[in-house]
Picture (tube, rainbow, N blue to C red):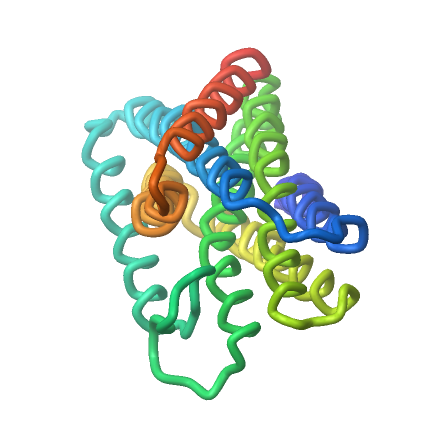
Length: 264
């Protein structure tokens, strides 16, 4: 388990660092970011998460279940629904506000608008941390099998790449809301701190519930796809033209698919 924790901490530490690096753009960009670029970035993140859900989570979950003599689709479907239910519950409970929205979602709160904006991104970073942590936990359970370890690394790399524009997508609007650059950067960076936290937590859970690994992998996939359909794709297609968001999705999917197949 120690090895799995170290791998998960390194992988999710990298994705968190990429979020912070993206948030640091707030110190260099002086003018307001264009809506087209925001849509491309949101679409790219959605494409990465769709591909990761299939190649890095659902397919390995089915393979794990079948290797254990189970019917592959049952834990895949069951875990998927659990992941959707988890994010649906968090979405309904955690107060948050999406960029461009006038009304906050979740339970009523007295949080500031800036806090609600950060919580919106923090919410969908949770399944990303779970996915990376579980991928490294699976590799550790198979004694660091090279292919699985490479696949986990590819997933961390893909999530990290899409976290870079995501970090900027948090810090830049916060600066436009009136925050100082340093505070906007801090909020943007901290929106990704849940990734190493949840990445390590799911490794600890997987160590205690090793036979349920297919269910856990599928749950992470369901949680990620909930975020994609509920938040990322709708926000990527706001406005008169949807092509930038659509092309962003295609690019993100392609990049994550190539990373997983080439490195895995």
